[in-house]
Image (tube, rainbow, N blue to C red; front, side, top):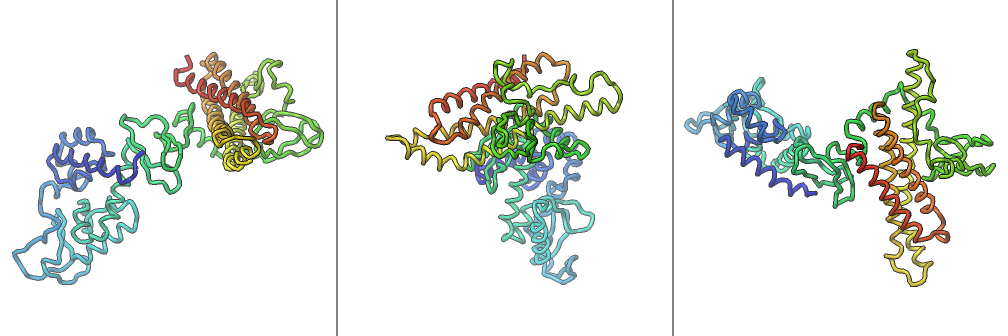
Length: 448
């Protein structure tokens, strides 16, 4: 991760390289690079095919042909006053400034024009000559010549454009953070963790890390969830009835092991089945993570039946996605309270140091990460094709094991401090981490 000021030399170096190769002014090189997403090779290829066409298209033809210099009045030979085409007032030649295209205006109007453009925001880097119908690009040369007080802001927007348009860089999405992630390989794959604000994000799309789901799958999933025709808000109410006594229960912690306060019935928040059915002696800890299309509608092949099966499938994955998303939020809240719990734990244990109680913070951080991964395993599983049934079965096994140990870790981190066993928490954290890495590695290896 780089500070925004550290990325400026990278931008200027690229401009210098293009300036030398194409033999054009630096201001023109900046414009052309920006319009080609700061990819030199793409610019070179198009430029050499038809240099004049490219220069004219992006408004640097006059600049490259050196019609005139923007920092020099259009003519010094005559002291006759000139009329500005904007304010229609007469000015001396020294008070007039011409664009490379030949259109000249008084410095006062130039300052007002540039100030208005910069006040409009980042689009100021694409502003063109004030003359109607002229597409000659206004660059930092004009800004420096007649509005030097506005030059730092203009350059700031130029740098912002470099980061946002460039396929090799991305701003850290952390609130108020101005650091930049930069990749040396094309395509920006992987995850970055900002060392300034500790924000983790996907380098390709800027969202939170979403492995094993791809960026494309995540976009499709988010779009699907926004679709009102498939909204699942009604099924994701804040309360659910106890399967035994029908008392309304609110889930206010991260663990899916529910205990009804009225009848003491223990059940799973996800599938509402008895919690006893989720043990190893029943053939698998978390069988409710699997979607069985055969339980939806049977063999009915009508359009309505197919639509119902598709909706049932979507709701199956969405409910579990949402459950882990809510559990992730709770774990993040839990992390904020962890330091105070660590202080109490240290004080309640003889001769203990701060390092002796850091296991609790590590456990909650691991829990947050696992909830995030589990959340996106359901996005990934939703888009798995039917012809990968064997791979899907193995994937669901990895998913089931990760959920099993994540739920266990969630339970023991929510215990009162007096009942907490340090060794148990440390071991469970390591186990959960291993299973999380297993499922991500399995997908990365092509599920072979």
